Image (cartoon, rainbow, N blue to C red; front, side, top):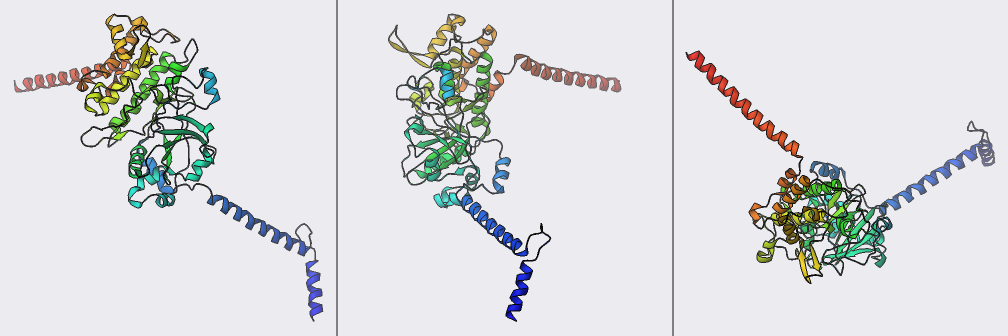
Length: 463
């Protein structure tokens, strides 16, 4: 019986099937191999997925979409031999376009990144629950130290693109190929609460003219921030580091940079609650993309204003020679009007192509840009105010209007300085302003006319 059964089974296995005429045993073998391969593929996919940053849940997108564009930050980077903080670009394209070396004037740029949303569980594992809010968990990715080290080649010296009083900036590439800037802050390991508070304050901000914070890392004594990457340098480089006879920054480009930076700063002052005072508005912190669109960086030391509307900044004067408002020297208090003052100096810098503080070989003394500009205006010497590398002539009317705005921003009386929202309005085309004024007058006159007609009609009825 056993032999008969085996003979019958052997006959069935060797029988041709309708599947391409293959023997039954061959079809069975193929099925087994396919199943084994599928299992192996599944195991490989499972293992690889465990080593990748996990995307956040659907709450992340709904939360981020429900928040009107809030921002990010990047930190200042300062060279050893100049007052401005900088981080020099590693891009060979930028180096070639500027035709300048890395050694002088602290030419600086900033870096940024694009990364996936963070895994909420990983956040909880790195911070005490009371230190990490749910909103912060959904907004920024929490990177592991291993991810940061891999992106920066173990914090290799060749990846350093800048350093300053607040930290060191490294060029990095994430697992997904995104280019990023990683700032390793010089924080004491015992001040994790301050770091978390800073990240929360920065994380709320989202605006197209602010450098985007993509994530952070805090393991052990490390305190790091990861940003989106911009590869066209910063405004300081293009104003003072370009050796071309004619600057690529035309007047229209400069005005666009001014207006966009004003919008980003106005957002921090007027559209975020609690408001954020930047404290480091200067040309090295205005980063540019390939279309010359600016983004404000270095929100790392910005203080969130409380009910008293002021912020005591212990480090705001570092790297800010020539930009600091005069009241800070006497009070040590920095508020949004101090940012307006720094913006006014930046505006003068863009117009003239001069740094806020220069050393005069004739007088062997430091010369502040604001004093030099005021002396030129007093002498009606407007021809000498414009950057000589400007590719085109600008109208005297446009020049005077821009200088007037700058002088209003640096008014010694803090109360007389405009808000950044007012500055934006000042840069609107004159014909648009006149049109708005005409509309208001027209509506007022029309309303008064209707009232007069109604009064006449009532008098006629009564008579």
